[in-house]
Image (cartoon, rainbow, N blue to C red; front, side, top):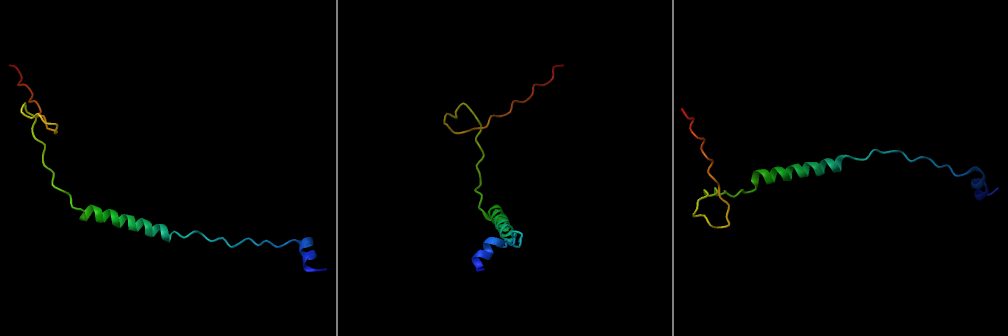
Length: 78
């Protein structure tokens, strides 16, 4: 009996490959890198100083934004 005939009769053993858990190390490194980039942006990115918006008046006729003064509540009548 040759090997081919024996393999056809008995079949080929199919051992299950050993199961290995996926490595979490690459994902941990990616997460650490993202945290460090986020902290670097938060701490070292220059934030420009903002100018306050002007008060809205009749003389303001531009397309710029302005801030309306909150109306003061009326005094209670006595």
